[in-house]
Length: 190
Image (cartoon, rainbow, N blue to C red):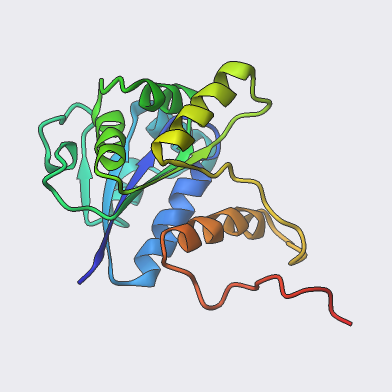
């Protein structure tokens, strides 16, 4: 039985996180990937990576237009295991926190929360103001996991991809889909 993961990509800078997460989930195997991409996410993806919607769709099993609020992801009766929004814009995060289900991305996240499934938000903004922090607190109280892409440096990254993978590896861990090849902190070598 495969793990069903919804991957949302919003318009925040950092589209590479969504791209890399899709690649890693596809390579993992045993994962059924459902893709939701916002219009601004599509534009940011192209501006930052040169990738198109078609490039993303080949990494997913299913993709849905933002307006399709009658699709299966909009219902709690359709079993999924988790949703990751990578990157997650402040707009998307705030709408989820407020329960404003105005499009499929937000409705799918709302369903994940109401069904007590795992919602991981790779919030991509800095610095945060008090309103952002209050929205994050509300979401954490609802059961969401706020996981801004903040790389570690103990593994001595050499490339931007190394930095991106640090955050994607943490998300894979949170999904219960760890990559056995990941270098883990094991204390200071003596």
